[in-house]
Picture 1 (cartoon, rainbow over the protein chains, first blue to last red):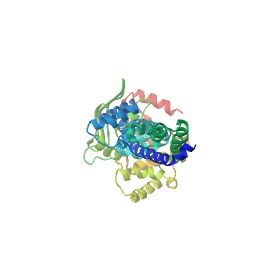
Picture 2 (tube, rainbow over the protein chains, first blue to last red; picture 1 turned 120 degrees about the vertical axis):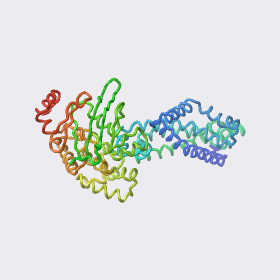
Picture 3 (cartoon, helix red, strand yellow; picture 1 turned 90 degrees about the vertical axis):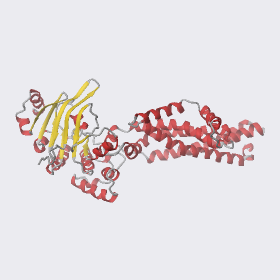
Picture 4 (tube, chains in turn cyan, yellow; picture 1 turned 180 degrees about the vertical axis):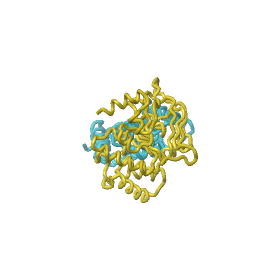
Length: 217
Length: 251
């Protein structure tokens, strides 16, 4: 285990960078995914078409291709930002499609009568979603959304590989290939443990959330 | 008492047609409902009576014909439709109370979000209405903690909180245990006596006799017969109505 403790500073830095990527991606992909889900269930056909297009595009494209396009394609189109920005952007675009579908499954699980009652009171479509349907959809959404978000946290390693650097995965990569450490202790003892700390914590928080949004029927 | 202050009925359906695929569920419906009038719609299942009721606030869009409320044509979608629906109260067979909100929050939501009333004002009005329908003591409970009869009375209070011009009841007692039917019907009779304009789809003949000005009998997507309750129940004109009544009144 000493290769890990010898480089504990690097691992802490890597951990924090991964956490940073994850938190930005979370803040971007969840609201975006909810918005796209709202488009997909909207009564307005062009919005529905846009939502379907978005999901089809990003759900069916490998994450590496999305990240490659963001990191190396966008600069060719004249958009110049940091690799960190592009890494997070790719992760947000890709994850939003899956968040959308998880949220949509929750929306579909709310009985149609709830939305009808909201409409009958004179609430418009957005108000009905916001005050009546989505709060109830949350309960069914938490487990699948949790899976999507935990997948995103692990996918942050792929984003890290696209020039972002300094995250957990890149730290392991650097220690083993550039500095010659043995792969096994670094990746199992350091990198994997780092990701586990993040994902297990996320799993525990999701359980708390699930209990909080439970609704008696 | 029913009235037509500007010569226009409150609700007017003219030449209304609707199809569910091949099925012609509403066929050339013409119906006028005056202010303060209580119209009971009865008929066998599949006769189109619920669809008719739901068409009045466009929960079911119609394919042909016109529906006007207070002289205004029912808008197709968007803000105008939402505004119109705010003036049309709806009570469902399955109550449809918002499951994640308390009884009080259910009643307050519309007035606050749609009518833009202050929360305090909406709450005090909501408590009055809950008192009126006899469930004031349940204000802080969730719908699932209430009996069906209590839930339906809350649903009536929720609709009344919008101060609607007309109330639609879509089989309001069909999902209730027998001993809870009367507590809901009593509230509805009270509303009728206070002059609320009501369209009630129901099988409750007792309610029709006590509160209705008019009975509309539907079958196969058409209005077959319209009469005052006494005439309809004692001397129905059409064979179809006679047949229907003989089936439901013998038990």
